[in-house]
Image (cartoon, rainbow, N blue to C red; front, side, top):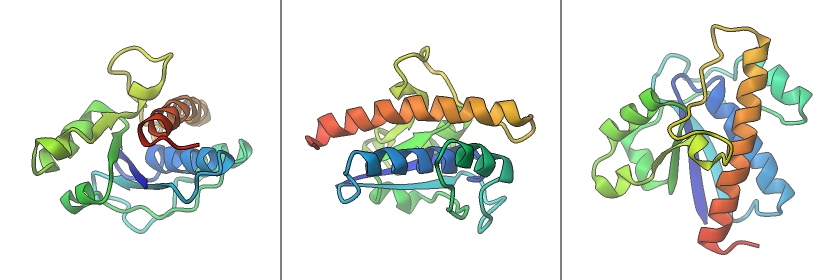
Length: 160
């Protein structure tokens, strides 16, 4: 069983978008029983809140449902997840500070590392203070990277 946690700042825009896209891809590949997906935020700003309405509308327009509630990532999460996927370098640094050792640090990746069209160290920008186009761009970036991540996981775990 592979376990993935997508992480952004507040867990209301980027990480729930990536979580929902990945769940949709996993379902389409009939791998629901072999890969688990969650999301969290590095901050506690929105704990218990649903996803941002703009993220929800953008995803639903693309056929993907956002249904999670925001939660904060904790050091204990490193023992649960095989992949801890950060949206940007600030999230990544926050996660690395929480990591108890080098083995857990190795679980932390930037999402766009898995996007074959992205340059090195590319980030998923926070669309929170922008307009609707930013949410469309984030969805597209997450979708490309999630497809690449799924390919990586299928190869690593030898999944159908």
